[in-house]
Length: 96
Image (tube, rainbow, N blue to C red):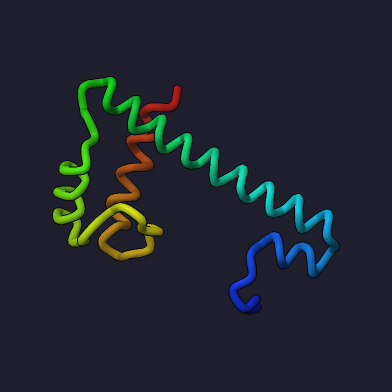
């Protein structure tokens, strides 16, 4: 079902009320902040173990998987599927 580009908070507000819409918007924002923190933790952990993550390295990696850039991407490109698979494997190895 299409929702004409509405956010999750807007959809919840229309379906179940203002309070639920506000709660959904806060929940989505919180999830995004947590995900950003996890990605930063992965970069810091990898860098502290002797594998620094630099912009140059990411640019070279993008070229290796057939992409122009890996920044500001949603990860839906076909060339990125293998990259995200390996990222998930590396993340799993970092989590105790």
